[in-house]
Image: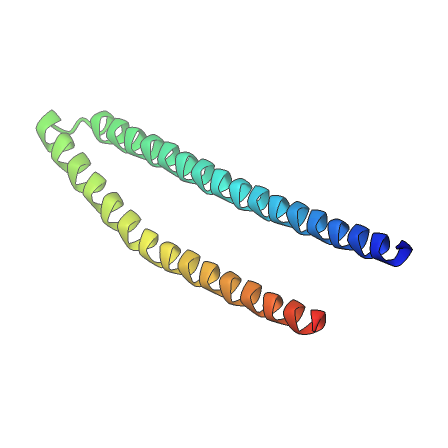
Length: 117
């Protein structure tokens, strides 16, 4: 009887531990997502500041308004193209990292199953 109780309590403790680990992993993923979102927002603000600064520089250089607007549109297009190029590798890196995490977690599960046997 005593051993059965001990086994049950050990099993319950392991289950609780697994649940806690899953919660911690979920929290870490949420924190990373929030961090990525904040970084993206900060980068957008920096880009807007750069655009405004460039526009002011063009206008203070006593350039014609239409010419300044055209140069600003060209500048914005350059920034958009650069941003698209930068996002592709970033999303690929995220996908690779996520794939590696899945493989690692699968390996850990297999090891746990072997240890149980």
